[in-house]
Length: 372
Image 1: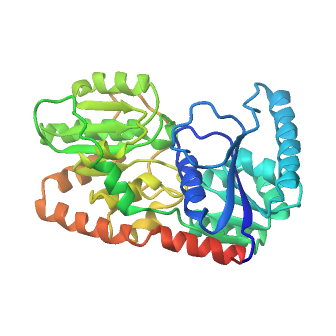
Image 2 (image 1 turned 180 degrees about the vertical axis):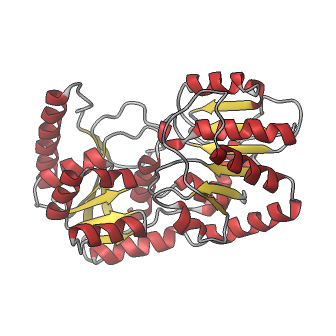
Image 3 (image 1 turned 135 degrees about the vertical axis):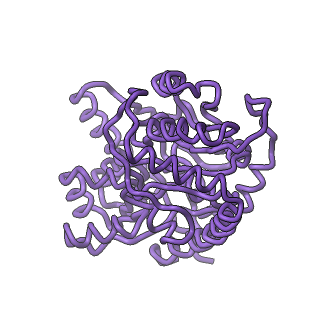
């Protein structure tokens, strides 16, 4: 019997986030076919279930200042190079931009796979050129990123690997608990999911929701994700909807909350492959999403949900300023909530599209790329 290939996953941390979740999911999915381990730079604030996985913490967390950051890159690279040698690693697959740099600089003893999980990764040309030069394979979460690497850098190592979705597991987690909402009255809940980060465009969503409330008084908004959201809460109060917006905070299992929603809205102005959008679709939520680079357009394909123009990245917490794009978003949300037939159609389309992002397809492609 042939010995399993050894795969090392490199990730800075495993706190709540999209690529962190995919890292853990990938380790579990590949365990039957490879000998896998996860190498962390810092094991604080782990938000995912790592029971049964081989996890190594090299205890080299973030250092402040430019000199400290550069020193950490050197330390991490040397430690990972040592681990690759000691563990006879065949493939080292990194998640996140800082892990990608460490992977690229830690020697060619193992094949170097780097994952580009966001279009923002493409902004640093020097970093991209390093990855193109050093990596054996660049796994891109969208076709657009892979095509741009080919066009701009002449890179023939880039392949598209959409994030996996285990629909049965997701639905089981959604049924694991029945969270109580903070409102006594029933009404449609609009949901969005993501950490507190301006790239998510939540101020646009809150302003649009305030307009929706003028037409649909029983509507509520729920934002699921880690963060204090202080400025956003203040904005909601100033718009007169403070009692109608629920910030859940970090949830290790966000899916019971997500399942309580009637509609999912994504307002990011940048994404890679928005996992939360597909997860919402798998739970049967109709979706409205910005046409941001990248992900939503490839997922929705002009038929599986409502795609709106991308929104401004300029943060504006001024409650007196409502832009035309926020008014347009409000109209799309209201149109969906007020039309039962439209809601039913897009629920069906969401569930249909979610079936295209299976774990089986994901594992099949990784095995193909690795020759297993």
